[in-house]
Image 1: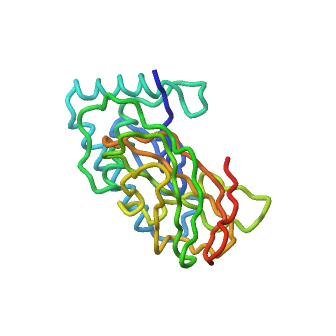
Image 2: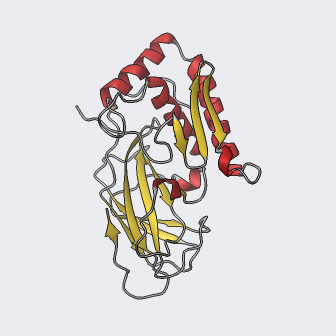
Length: 245
């Protein structure tokens, strides 16, 4: 049986994810900004994330006992381990909340019944294509998913990486165009180019940046993420080399 790890924007419900702290209480999931670094009002994206989780938590409570048990079984079947591979995996509630988060970000209805199919596989490669300017990235994603109907591709990027010695860190990644459907285009056939204009970070020609892609199935279940360090290509000419890891 195939198993996976929840990845992409959301990796753990307990602890810290980027600029958010997550905590499970008897009343559901509590989301808050990291207080030590709070220097300004919440951003629109932070408010979206809080709203998504609040809505998802209420919907979880509205599910029937049979539906919740089916989500617990799905979590146990396909996510038996934590992200380090040596501890218990997420509960059905956590898997549901993450699926509901992605569905809302994509502008789709919240899930109800647990899926039965395994999570999708990870992309197999990401390569950069020549863009018209430094506020656009064109990424070619390869994968082995078929059929692609109903699947989406979450694309996240980092700001420019200016030091040759530095690698992108998990907390550096942000949805390429924000937490909305523009960052979650429909998954196309393998080796298709995805063009993102007016991206959230300006990335000059020949600058390194991190790129992470996650395939999400029609029920909002994410597969494993594929991460690469790409070199932006803006001017005409040979495509810059790609460092994958």
